[in-house]
Image (cartoon, rainbow, N blue to C red):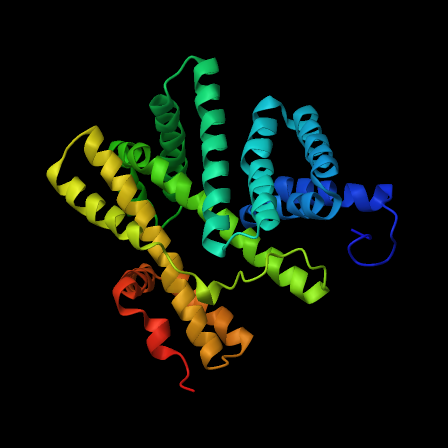
Length: 315
């Protein structure tokens, strides 16, 4: 990363390999600390923006080759589809000067579609249906939790509950997996955009897109129909149609949760709340489902109320 930091004008092997090494480190450290894996695309984005698409693509391909040799084709495809594609989409949004909402939507959809294609390909090669694979994942997780709680003196009732409701939990996981995975990809993209902006501003690298302030996030008005259709759909339909509408409702509410967080961020900036207190506020919000629901509700109401216009300082 020497070139961007002004320590040298000539690209050398250390500065070229640094993004790939850092990205691979984050990718493998996710086995110990899963949140670190979310940041895997950020160094790849750096290589694309600073060195250009050709060199950046070569860096990403080299990192993918390392994953292939170290962990096999499955992990390699996941690395390239989830993290490489997200980095490319964010870099393209930066090149086009897209808005925060458009950049996040582009990167989320691109990574989600690519990862979904890899999952379906893997299922086809394994000769199993996607639902069967998801059910096996969920069953393994439920069995592991049941075994874990069974070994605790105070966890017998919890273990019994998992054992009694195992089939329901597996079925529920399979039904909501499309929506949960989309929300997970959206969270990954959002975290990378925030980290890229923060590091770029602090270091003076200038690799962050201009105008990408969370406080100004605005969900498209048409998204409200996702909430309406999803709510009515799960009431009126059953079977596959109900599952589709359930996932639509989940994704739509997750987008409005982002708008609710943007409102909270706007208020923190409006009243110059110190950064440590802001961090504590976000921790509280995401630690309790009730607060998440309240933030989501405010984000939805902002479609009609436009709270930021009402709360903006008067001239």
